[in-house]
Amino acid sequence: MDAEPLPAPATLIDRLAEVVIRYSTRVQPGEVVSLVGPSSTEPLFAALYREVLQAGGHPIPRMMPAACDDLLYRHGNAAQLGYLDPLEVRGLEVADVVIYTLATVADPALGEVGADRIGLRHRPRLPLLEAFCRRTEAGELRWSAVQYPGAEAARDAGLSLDDYRAIYWRAALLDRTDPAAAWRALAERQARLAAFLET
Image 1 (cartoon, rainbow, N blue to C red):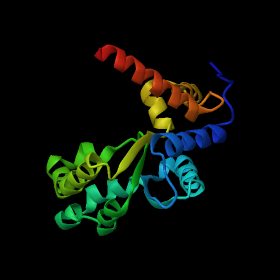
Image 2: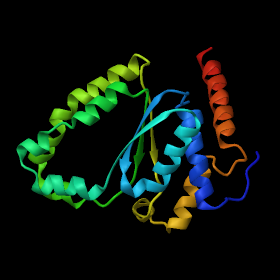
Image 3: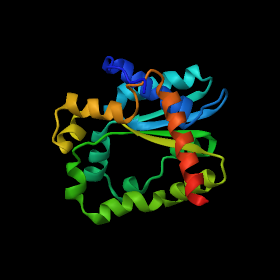
Image 4: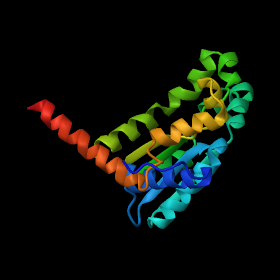
């Protein structure tokens, strides 16, 4: 293939953002794109924001530090835990695309707060999940979730951050000259194999 030595991390993050916007979600001019993720994913989050702008879309960023979730679980009362953010609800209603940036983080709160408090937080969110699934199934909403390769994920894998990221970048085909084209070629090959297996 046309694999290259890995470029600088900033270039790899830019390539990942390009793949997500140009290939995975195919953002079109005028579309509303909700970007959701923790602040620990900021380099990727910002690259996605820029790519949405370059694609002609309207990015709506919703970034929250993981510490805020921890504080809510530890100190929020029942009403606060059950409160459904109206901005989040409206964002889901108007978005054409939702992109989640994910990060592996140490989460001491969930192990300490108990299932009842976790339930108070998640039960009111079920209608949001149902709306998300309904819109996705109807073809009204496209979405993608992309992992940011951070230190906690590397630690969980038992690798140094550099080694973990090198594996991640290559698995995402970001060592290719044109990663989006590499993903399109892979999708075409998979489609041919699937068609063959169905005959």
